[in-house]
Length: 176
Image (tube, rainbow, N blue to C red; front, side, top):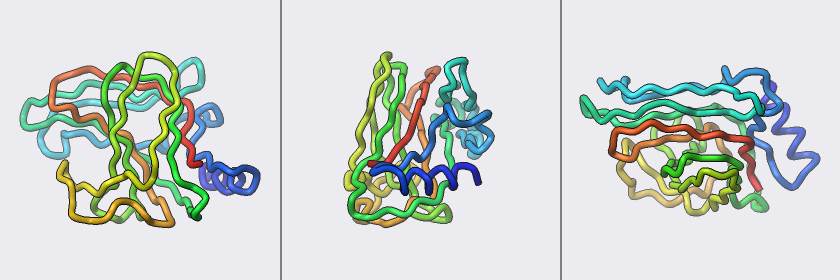
């Protein structure tokens, strides 16, 4: 509930929507992890706050037993209008590739997906909303790119088809 109130307040005061600012939260219990163990894999992940007040999504991905992904997701309730055209991520990565995912409605079965490359420095990544493509279980769907006026869930996923440890530190997620 606190996240929804912050989103509405942000919309009224700014030209951007703050989806999540980790520094304004005491914990990250709203974030849920979904790993490949839902289908027999053994990848592990968690979300926590670090000493700087940033969210840290970390763990290990294993391709054993046909696995190979880890995801953290957050239900949201965001109404968009035409002035909003991109997601802004402020984060520090580990040099690996990730996906940012959105759903227009949290009950939607597929995700809209866009990949991004991280560096080991704090960076701002811009992801144009129109470039999010529809995908289901790793397969691109024959559906138009994102053009909805709502976002019901967001997620960050790592699935690079190899065994690896990962760690991404997130400061803010915004829409501009």
